Length: 123
Image 1 (cartoon, helix red, strand yellow):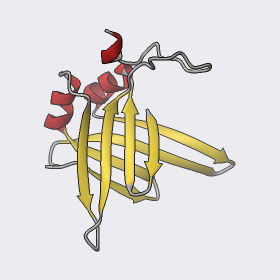
Image 2 (cartoon, one colour; image 1 turned 60 degrees about the vertical axis):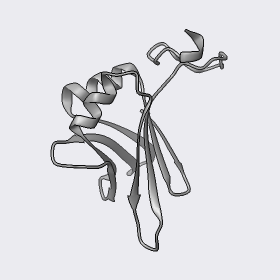
Image 3 (cartoon, rainbow, N blue to C red; image 1 turned 180 degrees about the vertical axis):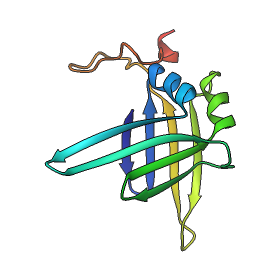
């Protein structure tokens, strides 16, 4: 699962295997280690009670929750993404985007697209 943070936006990109694991197990997780005792954990979890996507930051890292029905529909359709705007103070919002990871149209050294979704422009 790829994580991109830019300004007030959070984007997760999932491979085919990760989408399948999310549906089968209800969550997927990753960890970025920065050295001894320093790491950032991030998870994507399905929620039976959530009505909208939302993210929380705590001691355990970043957790993004998506309604289970929304995740299941997305996983089993041609839909590319799930997008939400989580309200913050001062009329601002955290943009949350969960996407299927498509294969690159141009080969890039070091990139492994073997588990990526086929790019629509390449079909």
